[in-house]
Image (cartoon, rainbow, N blue to C red; front, side, top):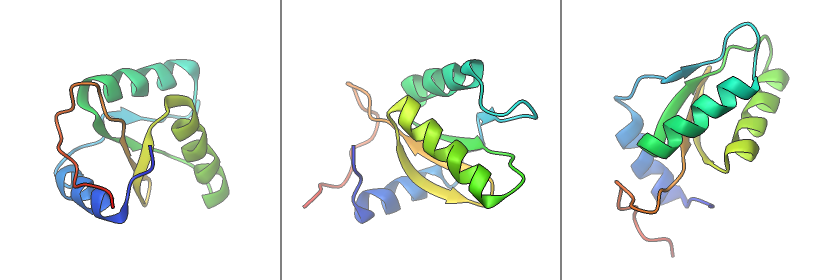
Length: 99
């Protein structure tokens, strides 16, 4: 799902008060972590993930892998915190319409 700029702004506003629900540790991105992110997305739709990485390239590779494996949309990456959105069948959010 590709989000428009307006939809991303809307989701950023909602996500502002959220705390990260998944923290990537020293072992990095494992199957267990991906399963946890997938479960959190299924339950909450909009989540934050804290990505601890040494450098930008590594962090970007991890973020790309998370987005690809979970079929989620990246809303924002600020510092080490990634905001993800994946719409459920019965969505909790009414996104602004895309043009």
